[in-house]
Image (cartoon, rainbow, N blue to C red; front, side, top):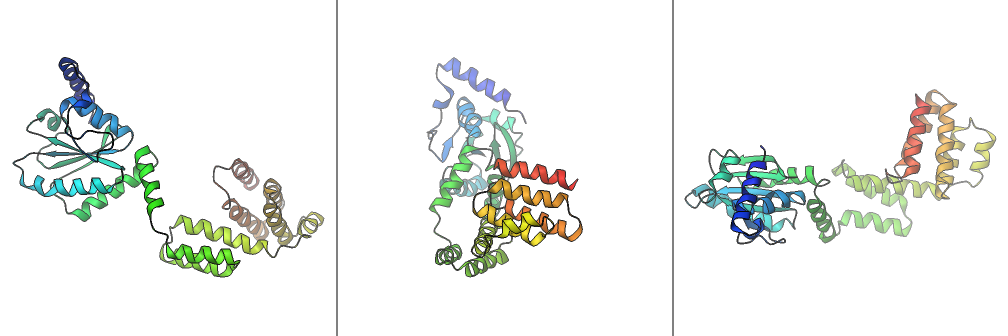
Length: 297
C-alpha cells in the first residue's frame, strides 16, 4: 500500500485552501495521544508523524456500532502509551478517499503506520487483551527504529518501581556477598531465561567473585609456561581486573592458536565469557572476536 497518492492530494488541497496540512483536526498537537485526521492533515499527522512514533489509524463512522466499542479502548491505550504511539481517528464518511486508499472493506479497520508506510492491520472490534498483544508486538519490533517508541520505553523503565529481586541481588553485591548475589540472579533466570539484565549481572558477579581470589603471580606463571591452561585463564582474569583488557584477550587467543581439544575449548569458553563483561560495541571486543575467528578457522 503506497501512501504517496493521498499525500499528493493532501498537499494539493492544502495549497488550494492556502493553509498547511497539519491545521486540520481537532487534536493534532505534537503531544496529543489521540488526533482527528482528514485528507488535508494526513501528510503531517500520519505520514510525517510516523517517522518518529507509531501511528495507529482508526477508520470509523458514527453509524458503526462496533466502532463505538473499539474506539474508546484504543483511545485509552493510546493515552497510556507514554508517547510510544498515537491514535489517528479518520471518519470515513467525511474522508472516503482515505478509506479507499487503505482498501477498507468494512469498519472498524485499524492500520498501523511506521516510517511512512503501513506495517500491520486488523478489522473488527477485537478484545482488549488481543489489541494489547498486537500493540506490544509492533512496539517491540519498532523500538530500535522509531525515536518515540525508544524514548517511551526508556521513560517506562525509569518510572517502573524497583524489582525486589534485583534489589536483593544488588544489596548482596554491596555487602560483598557475591555468592548470594549470583544465587539471586540465577533465581531470576530460572523464572525468566531470556532476562538479559540478569544474564549480564550474573556474568559480572561471577567475575567479581573470582577477582577477589586472584593470585598476583598468575601472570608470571602463565608467561613461564604457555601450555598451563589454568594459569592462562587466571592470568587473563587478573589482567582484566587491572584494566589490561587487550593483553588478557591476546593471551587467551594465543593459547587457542597453540592448543587443541579440551584445552582449546576451555580457553575459548573463558574468552567468550570475558567478552560478556563489556559492551558489544567495545572496539577491543570487536577486534578480539575477529582474532578469535582467525585462530579457530
